Length: 196
Image (cartoon, rainbow, N blue to C red; front, side, top):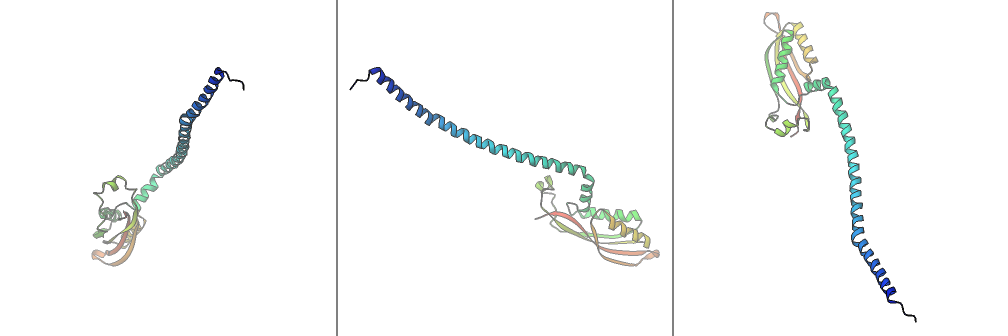
């Protein structure tokens, strides 16, 4: 059997060692880097998907803001019709101003609401009043006014057509001094209070 020269044996050993080194290099360096790159590509794809979702939400939000800004009169009307608090003084002021506008004299105004509606100390609610879940609440009241029949009729029309949502629940009319009439009304006004 012919003898393999020593230089060929060395070359064969070098080739085997080179293959082993290449295998180890691939196993310990290239494959982990490839897995890391695949994980980063998957994360990048997820981030790109989230970015497109956020972009769509942002476009929708900007459209809603634009609609809200262009509808400021309707928003003001809604805020007046259904305020976000049960402030009885505002309702009393409204009734007095409606009465003065038609010339009737208010002899008595009594308005009561729910006792747990004070939110002045709730800083979270005050910082984001539209973020709270709200329910429809009622302010009940009684009022008495005196005036001529035409004035009382005008007052009822003003009350009915005011921007504030007010229901007349009870109505009584009697004669008053000086040829005038006395009108007693039971009313309900509404507001949106935070759910407790």
